[in-house]
Length: 616
Image (cartoon, rainbow, N blue to C red; front, side, top):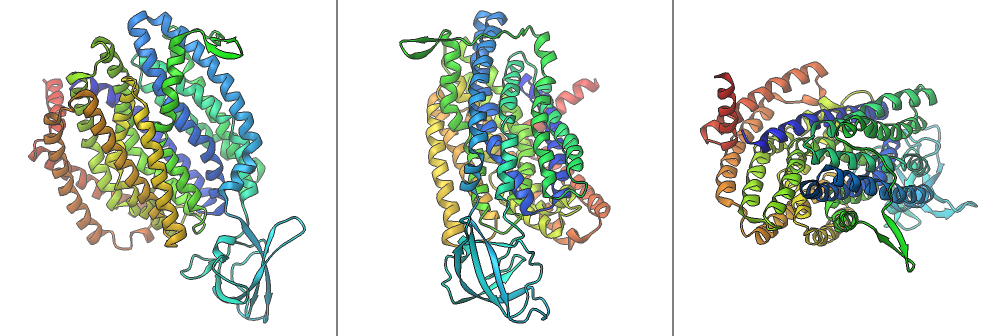
């Protein structure tokens, strides 16, 4: 077993703890609040600082810092590397204080841009004593504005509408195709050809939650720098466990503070979880400080900037390299996060619970990607950075061979993950989320989204391996340009699905993300082949074809198991569901390993040799 495999498995084990606790966090959210507009508001508010965290801190900044610091440590030693770290930390804190202040001030404006405008309902009922209807015929008499400028939509109904609260609202975009005097259908439940009536407008709640959570990006950025520094010195486990500390802190303090606000966990209790997000960010930093100190880090405030002729200049060119690599890296690293943010914006135009379905499915989709794609990419970056120094800045066959082994290793785990999550999406979602206010309908909705995401899982995992290599080669601008092109494709497709074709299924938005991530991976692969002169396809392709053949066998078996044994699965009790899925999963895993053995998959042979060597 190679050093790449060993370090990747260490990082994988730590990331598994992180992602498992992340799923626990989602289970708590959905169990307490369900797939509702209130939880949509919380996830939308968190998406803004979290997207910046993923793009800026844990994406581009962490990777560019790791790349430059690895080269400095290789050439000039640990003392020079820690001096660079102190300068970047001081510069980061100064920048983030400004970003957090601006974010707090602009939270209301940001939520106004994300949330489609709602109108409060003014209903005149001809027979208020009649039985309430699930779908009521209504005459739309027009929309006006009250003294505060809020929209008011007026309707005349022949009978009361069931489940219509006093603060009910309707989206103005849903009324655009109707003229005053038109007859339409109103319903409080998602119904085809009916205008959806919602409980209330949660935009104000989202704005308040967003203001509270903005400091999280400062703390998460410091945590990302700590992670990058520890990766340089070969420590991959602890930095990823820091994210587990964030998840556990968020759940623990969120439940406590939310219960103190309201024991029934009404929407206002989400303010407790917003406060817990900031506390979780602090926990991420604190758990890494002892390891940094053992490796020689001593905090010093060294801004590394000077003002000359009205310009702010860097005193250390290596610190400048970190930020120059980061600028295009912010764009390149944020491809998927930008798509998720775009999806969230469009999902707000779909039936309530769509944002929650996207979020839950995305966390399950990211689990195998983080376990293997992110873990391997984390190990690849410092090693490739050192290779560029040893080979005089040239890529060469050694780097290509290293990447081919890494991609093949990731594919060995990503292919069966895509098959299982894609074919058994609803069943797996029900195990994690179906409890409390998260019912079978929400499980089915989230499972459909997960299946759409899984079409791009292999490309997304491969992209996570190749993306850091551009920073190690100091060629970040090509991926940045692709990111802008991909974002444009994502916006165009989502706009067509939601506003042109009027699709109400949120899985179409996930399908866009799968298409874009697959396109990104293909571009990364062929462009790196151009830069390096080769991508060691004689190492990569035969092994990949063997893995895909084993995955095909697994897919056929999983399809048959679902059709024969999982009938009406979502309405079973929890323990029967858990037992059935555990047995079926064990059978599927055994079949995949057997197929891999028959097809002589190289990764399985490497694990087998390592295991037999230890036994001897």
